[in-house]
Length: 411
Ligand SMILES: *Cc1c(COP(=O)(O)O)cnc(C)c1O
Image (cartoon, rainbow, N blue to C red; front, side):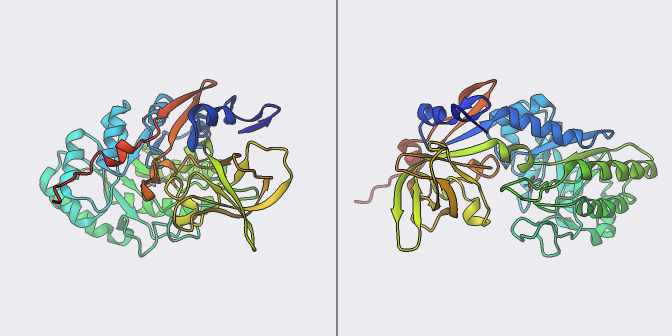
């Protein structure tokens, strides 16, 4: 997003025009930014056969999936529904990794029938998989290296109490199951969570995976998951992907030489690809002066963007319709009957009723975590592609809310 003489623009299109044309609230994504993020990350691992599997739970609009596919991405999916959307977007089943947790075995069977790359994260499921498919269908194993990523236990999934993955200490047990059923393990996987700051955490996890790899002879890839931290506010320390890249390339090459085979290296970025490419635009409904603060109340809320409330995440907010206004302090709140605060004590250009606020970093885990709470409709989604705005999801309507409700005879 840029501030020009014509106001704030995204991919060459005025954001105010987007709000005018498609109404608000509306999610807007910049296709160029997504593509640039993809190549920046991919280039950081130059020298390796690196494959980025977009973790599409971050933003699942089919156009985003298609866009990334054109650039050469694969997909990381956590449900059969996500995989189906991926297939619809044109991905080959072999380009789709299926990394669910706590699902029924019937869903895994479905994924096998579709030809997805299966990632197993639990011992009894592995046993059942071996029993069912023997050596006929390969699978990847999700290991838990017990590494704490970031500072927030909500987004850290590789620590000791985490429900994800099979403990790295249980590799001998995995090996017994694999041997007794002849399971072909084609990959080892770890995903320790979001917000990894330095190369050191990746490297620690990587080393544990290299160690575990000695127990498996048929590996084709290693998957180091994600956790690339993105910038949410000025001054945020973020993952230096080039630093991580340089160190991982080094260590991965050494590992491959020892293993005796050049394996593929996979990552599963979600946030990194789409977070900074998206904005949620909302209208200011009320400006309310109280004894302690001034609230700017918008026509959106936790039903559209949950991260500030759920993770205490900081999302930068801009008043895009009054960029030259005097700066004042506001708390930006939603219209849901909950304390749904987007941001406390934010310095914004003077906010007037009818102004349009842009909430930044809304590309990842924005629309995809939205709901109809308070029977509110979900916003439209718009993608800026080649200098033009395109509607990529219609705003919901009341029929949608009632569509699956079944009215019974209460007489
Ligand atoms: C959510 C998830 C990701 C993506 O994490 P980001 O922090 O958005 O990059 C990657 N892999 C798995 C298995 C996930 O569940």
